[in-house]
Image 1 (cartoon, helix red, strand yellow):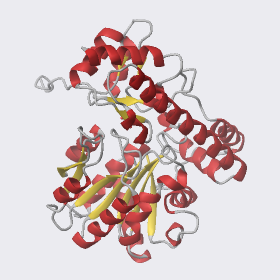
Image 2 (spheres, rainbow, N blue to C red; image 1 turned 90 degrees about the horizontal axis):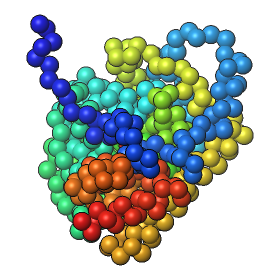
Image 3 (cartoon, rainbow, N blue to C red; image 1 turned 180 degrees about the vertical axis):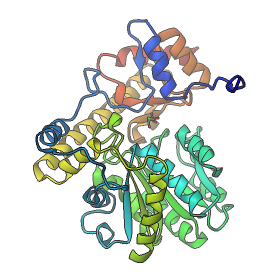
Length: 398
Ligand code: LMR
């Protein structure tokens, strides 16, 4: 038989948790695995600005014909405005091109394919730890990967000197994948001086920056969260940026992301764009329209845009509040000092729980977090906080 030799693959370390959670029949189970925002009632809401945009699209849309291969040009311009800032020449001078991709994952995959297809590099440097799919995408697109240290478990901070020391082994032309904000899974971002140092280092060593920007607006704000990316671009004329609207628009299942290729000039960008079209055409042919039109509608209407920023701030503030409460309650429970969580940003807290403690949380309490100890803080609410803190304290005490 043709398929007999196929071996069963392990479940995905993040999405597989949701499957397991759904099969769990215990009342009081809590899913803090996948990075999906939930409100105080435990629901993942559709943003009001999104609902209004959908209403308008529904009323006004006249055709379901194909979109251009790289998406609607205005969607690309608005995406670049979020990345580079309104006043940046890169938004519209033609030196950067943007392609609508199916989610941030799609953008990463198209970026990796583009690197291989254009012979840009064979090696990508990935932070350790990182979002597990970075490694999987690198492997399946045919890139070799190396790791640079990004987390010191003793100090719960970024070992910046070691990180730079390891990166100094990178060869000219290698790609360095950087989380632009809200590092997944640690929640730790570089400070402004470190961003500057990294930026100059990449330029001097002739390394290609690839930025994964999946959480813009979930750290400190839309502009604040773009500061690291902009610091990199200050010294580097070329970069790849994978951005996502899954989280900040709550458009998870609509798969809206973008790959932006920043080039030294317009002529190069035009050539890059012509090749990007082939990357897309040979993969998904052209992008799905609905999510892209939602983003386009919201970002191009001042009222909807303001509403979006308000709704995004509500999500961000609730997450930060839950993180503070979790840290304070764990400190009160006397099982350790969790004040380090306060310095983390974005949807996740890297708790420091061991693999065994994570397994015990799942087995004994029906609480699902990622094996690395990553907790999706965006899934905590007043209704499940007590249970979570009690369970964590119990597994820590052993
Ligand atoms: C996560 O890290 O949980 C999210 O980015 C969702 C995913 O696809 O893994």
